Length: 640
Image (cartoon, rainbow, N blue to C red; front, side, top):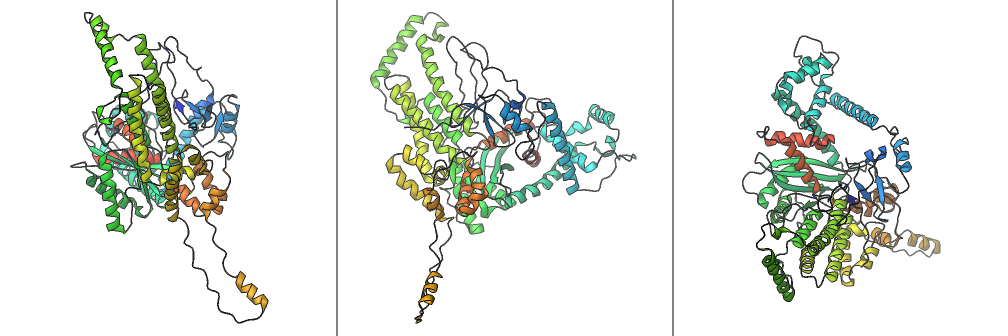
């Protein structure tokens, strides 16, 4: 079956011996299955060969500092051609790397709207521009919420604007996850006083005031984010996960995904809720309902993207009942429950690596017996040598290479989907791709006593979750609403008996968006003999309504755009398909993975250290939400 390539991201390869030099990828942590309450992280590495290594040429051009990933050696590959490409971190432009870096450089240096107006080759200048942007944002924020301030000494302090100082200092301590007591450190204050002697006039000298500053900024910024969410162009989609913090708090992280009024795909952290008592679905539903009430988007609530834990199924069912009782909103808990694609791939990888009897996979008993004899002979031969049992033979290394080669494909697929801008239209394509790799492996290694059970086990696990996608129309609709696919991809790659049920699913979803046809007007009885009047009355009747969805499906497929979502947000599509475009924007803004809560917890773990383990849930929530709302990335590994 023909499979379309996905956009893959590859990490840099390290130099060294082939047996130790693979790149390790951790796609998602805290991955759960209904069968298992806890699962380990999926790690993969691949030696290029058993005897030599191939290291890509290091990048030196300044343009690679302006790609989405902080590591300039991260490689991106085109979905269509499979060739390496450059991606802009400020917009969705991409350029091939095979022809040099002139095109990306031109894009970065050209003035808006075609480019970004950056100075050529000056990363330092870009940082300065960023600093100026932060200061300007702080100035605007301070002007919007000006307050009366009390001087801390008898100096005038005219060189410092105190409201702006509060915003900048809060950004500083949240971005670098610094202790609030830093403000009490004499050496730190001496440094600031050396830079500007007016600092003691306005900067508090107690950590309690810093905490009040953070909570105050949290409330101010929350109102702004709430306005953006309530005026969103799409529905509000939720990714959430449960995590145990270093100070033993059970924290539920809630992240909202949506398209803003100005057509930007965004995500913001809404809450980090301390879950007391049992972590069952009913308790989680109460916490989620509190978030929905607080932020006021019950009528715009869309799909949930979560891992495969059983308490998430219970949670969304309880939430459905709460929405019906409190808001009289009918919310289908099954159709609106989507599963994180990264977790599914991780579970398939673990089933591939650790074949268990409960998978009920048919095995070749004769092959198993043959393998047992080989193992016994191996131990008889080396039984008297202490360390010889750990030595890998050439056959063992060949098997390891096969395993790593396959895991590399799973890793690349996961990397392609874990981006903040990877949406639901890639999910079924990714599952088709991975299933195809399992099927090829099953056929290729059918007689291999080691590899055959592994491929069977992984295929069975992935197939289990593939079938669950039939429970929601969103998965198929995301493919159909991609203007380059429409129904062509499904007709070409799926079994014929799958097509009709899929079309019914999408038609059901379209019923929620398409306009209700008005009843035909009854022509009044007329006894006129005037032929013109009879002709006129006939043509005054409204013409039959053209179905936007049918018109879209029958039209030619479209190519050459950056993403399906941006295509639907164009004014042309908004006018041509006024109702279908709403459905498309809703479906194509759903994230492919629940990766954002994982990123949120990674940042929170930096905030809560062994020296800051008494932080309450309120200040943890305020700190992490401000990071999200300010667009701050954690300075992990830096001694800020």
